Length: 617
Ligand code: ADP
Image (cartoon, rainbow, N blue to C red; front, side):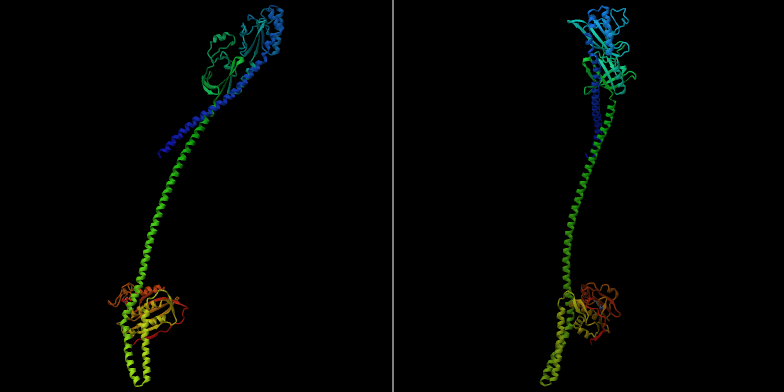
């Protein structure tokens, strides 16, 4: 249906062009013909009034002549030569003054008695007495009326006023005045020549053209009347009375008709618009033939105009159809876009929801992991404590045994009164108790769960605390500890966790040195780029290069089962990272070197510290 629409519109356009052409032609033709008819009608009025005015100038003349006494006398005494003479002269004078062509008087028998041209019925010896009268005017019957007739001399048209004369009710004869219409006709011919588009015909009651603006049409017949009868009437002298060859083609409205006129010269024909107006008093009708060529030319233009208008209408319809389709497609595309957009939004919503869920899950896992790490760290710490427990208990048992021996010894000394030695012993006891108290205090604080909140911590104290915990081992294994940590350096960390890192590094170092004869543990700190780098080096066996990469892997250990978990370095590295630093390992000259950095709290130190060397022998 949609595909068929443009073809339908194209057909419609063709139809509209055709209808537009026909309509344009018809409307223009009708309007043009109507205008032409209106102009012709006005002209007819003018011609009719010209003719009537021309004849009206003479209308009074016959009745005036009828009451003239010389004419009366002639009718009373037609054979009196003198009377005839007077009447003839009178008629001649009146004729000259009135400007008519001929005036004559007839007797009741129709025969002329006297005329202005010298004719005289019984005047054989009168000069001009035998001048003939027009054939049309001979033997006029009693009821004769005015009439047109051809001029025998030159073929122009004359008009005869016929006035009956009666006396006491008795018919006595006629007064006849003949006037020429040649001047009027000449103006018409002149007009006709100037106005090519319009021709005038005066047609009498016999359908004969008696006057015309086209001389060739004169005395041609419109109808088909008995030509011989007409010719014998004497009114169309010398005329052949051939048919004009005019036939009606059709009505054009406004009382006019379209007629076809045969052209004698070209043997063709032409079409004219005929308009008619009767002039009743003169018993004739005036006919104008207008050339509608201009009208039809205009109508042809109008047809093209109408066709163009139809075409434009069709194209507009086509444009409208295209536009409607384009808008529909636009709507469709917009809907599709909207749908795609909605779908995308739904997908984004779904994805966001999934991401949020994943995120929540991740958060939960992180929290779990953090907790696990916390627990792991604590476990690592406790494991370290467990490993140290044997040494520590030995460390405490030793002073306890000494304390017991000393206290017994002191009691004996007290009995023997050696007070000075008692006092020395008590001082020793006090020292030992304080030493045990320090160890247990360290154990307690080390076992405590630390936090990740960084705060200023004295680095030397942390190192010292851890060495206290390991003191028994250091001594038992005869380790030489070299310590170069400035006493006033403070780092940002949690002391508990920092000690956990140090304990792990020191323990690993001691383990590594278990089988080496020369046992040295070096602990120092240096300032580097606003941070403090803590270094722990040992003179142990070190480790092969291939193990270095795995050092910070969870559960990597080279120690026998029950001694190592492989978590110490993992946990230490994590703790250092929490305080913004990194734990690194490298092979040293003899053993391993571990380093980590921490943020220095306060002003940067300028001096270097000489290492304290301590041999636990
Ligand atoms: P553990 O001590 O429980 O084995 P760690 O993570 O602390 O776990 O250490 C992992 C391993 O790294 C040790 O088993 C050891 O082989 C090696 N290691 C650590 N420190 C040193 C060191 N100072 N010298 C030689 N090897 C070391």
